[in-house]
Length: 185
View 1 (cartoon, one colour):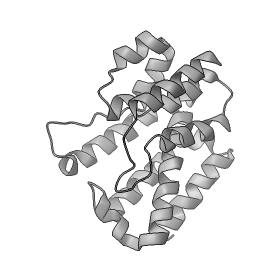
View 2 (cartoon, rainbow, N blue to C red):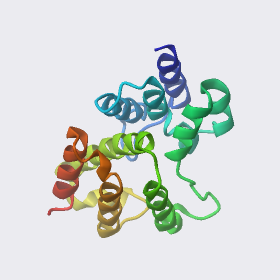
View 3 (cartoon, rainbow, N blue to C red):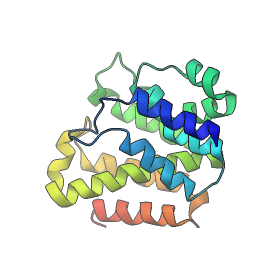
């Protein structure tokens, strides 16, 4: 349990002052929600710790080496598996497709532990998108680096296809239902 408490505290500290895309919602809500989703899929504290840490390397100055030093090899490996290479030398709108394709390719050989983190992360994201679609309609896509709704649909459906080992879980069914609702199918 100590490792999970340490991960939660670290994530809160590192995401301090950050907000969700185009909102006033503190960013930490997302990793905490993702961790809560993961807790419905596993009782493995290291997976839960990696889930709450999943955006620390991607979105803050923290490097994977620091995660390894503080939390160990397994948690660092799990965090790295869900850390997108932001390709910071390319504008985000231009690197979006390459980044998402890399995620899908990596998912094809990901472990079930890694897929639990991805499902937890993406279910939290699609919940947020769904709420924004209800509130703002298709104007929501203007908030993203990639503005083409059809490409987002491709990505979220490819995620579902590549984490289908979790298809017997409530979280997976919720994810697929929300993807269908967001993309009107």
